Amino acid sequence: MAGFDRNFTDELRARLSIVDVVSRRVPLVKKGQNYWGCCPFHNEKTPSFSVNEDKGFYHCFGCGEHGDIISFVMKSQNLDFRAAITELAAAAGLKMPDYKPKSPDQVAREESYVQIMESAAQIYQKKLYEPDGANALEYVHRRGFNDDMIKKYRIGYAPKNNFIANKFVNVKQDNLMATGLCRRGEYGMYDFFRDKLMFPIFNAHGQIIAFSGRSLDGSEPKYINTTDTELFHKRRTIFGFNFARDAIHRANRSIVVEGQIDAIQMQCNGFPETVAPLGTALTEDHISILCKANRNIVFCFDGDAAGQKAAARACDIVMPFLRDASDVRFAFVTGGKDPDEVLKTSGADGMRKIIDGAASLVDFLWNLANAGFTVSTPNGRTQAEKFLKQKIGKISDVTLRGEYEHEYDSRMFNEWHKWRKSKNNAPKIDLPQIDSITQNTLIFITNKYPDIAEQYAEFLASLNISLDGDAPDMNLDRPAAEKYLVSLKLQKYLEKLYIQRKELAGQMLTGADVAGKIAEIDENIRDANSRLEKLISM
Image (cartoon, rainbow, N blue to C red):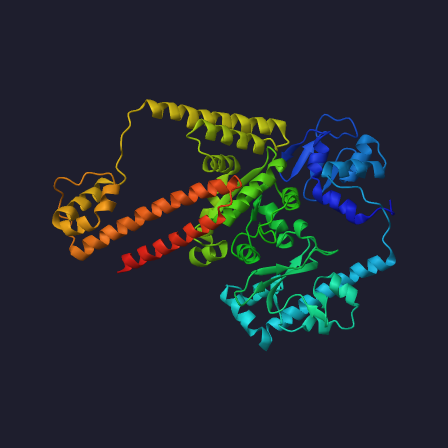
């Protein structure tokens, strides 16, 4: 067994849920934090076989059998070690490597990487409080980080020059480059991170394995991360997980946000169970790690086009991981804000309302189908139905998949077909787009200020209401009347923009390249809102 690469067996344990592996042979029921069933290694009628998903082990309180996914497959199927990991590798979709024991040089090299990263973190921390880090310190304080938070998360500053390359001049260059901190150029070694606010990236055991650097001058990209190394694999690393792990158990859920600053602020302001992928590139490995900690997940993304797209991707990735004990939800921070801004302006209570109002996965997926296809037509309903079937077809639990199918069959009948029939049989009525108070106000303006009404005649005609007759005195002078009309016109314009944006967002989910159009509409929305706010404040 000593000749097998531990990195590969660790990856098997990280990728595969012990609950999934054991439940193929032992029916399990969740009670508290553990799953329970009758032990497969001795005869019993009362379940004493416990499985802990987060820690990745099983234990029988009857016969004392204890182990992980590898020992379970070996013992339950009477396989040797190599045969067991071959079967598990197939289940995890991994290729079996050629096993070779680590050489003393490899062990020493990996230990040096950890030492280099730890030393670099200490240097960055010190630099943050020195004169050349003054701008970075002012920025991080302005973002709401106090010194205790800076210390806890070991935030630092990477200077503009090649400070790390010069500081580690006595370290073997190949080892220094292997950490991702430095690169070799035409004129020698140079720092990868320069003039950056530095966020250390920890593994689950609290060791620093990489860094994420944030620009301080507004340049793009906002964040750059260490490239993949022997220590660090971006697709298998979750920012903040080492701090959130225990809190996820206590809260019985994890919260996933988009960025590092959002994750830290959430953790420090009442939501310690919050984590973030390194960017919006959520992966199957990220979901696997989170599900092993807890299968209840709230995805909290920005309400813009990128956030909506990230949520749709998260929904797609999480489907194979769903179990009957899963509670997956989707929350969005709207108004151009992110969790950090919400916490600053509305506090933890404001953020809690957003999290508590998160849509269930079944509702979110249903909304995706309705936004992405024209369900008022037979063709659109057919496309939407195929979309839903394709998504829920990824659920591996047959019973749960059947429940989703039943739920959507019911919704399709009641909301698409039944509703369409009743609507088609009903008389067609052109309903007013505004309430009676607004209508009376417009009648008053039309009667008292006909010249203003003539100026806005095209807009008034578009409202599809009658402006004949008399109305109560609304006590509006000429400037107030014109301000009222301009305000109403802006509101109606905004309504149209939001409708257009929703339609385009639906097209994006089906693969259409409409990001540019959405960005243009977002800019128009911001401009119209700004004009409306200025008008109201006058």
